Length: 166
Image (tube, rainbow, N blue to C red; front, side, top):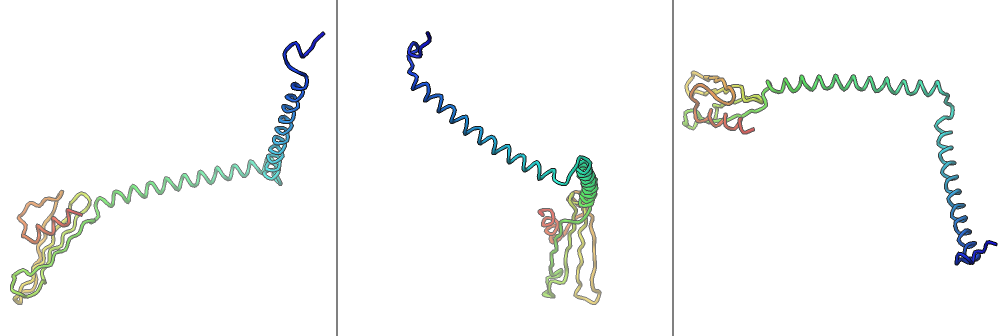
């Protein structure tokens, strides 16, 4: 005949362990039923008023929206590329220096304007005010890659240096 005592365990201890395992399993079953119930309610909420055809139409509309958005992103990328190209040729660096051309106390009516693009191409405009009735004289000098091929006055050199530092 079979006896638990042969294994060194008492029947009371085995019954207690089995009751504890059974109680733990019961708790786990209740937790799983609660989770399944929550998933069922979410599923019913998702599917309410929907059949396979309306869900397919909803997904199709979402995909069409995504295609539209992707097309717009492509257009925006193209526009940004054109803007970047234009920024290379627009004047971005500007320096204006006012000075008294003849240092005769007539005021700072003469000026040097330097305008450069991103790659430091541009011009230097020097407008000199004469104290006589002759008025103004303007000179323009071309700048290529931050360099000029003619001699610069002190004010022109300072204006070019300021523009290059921007």
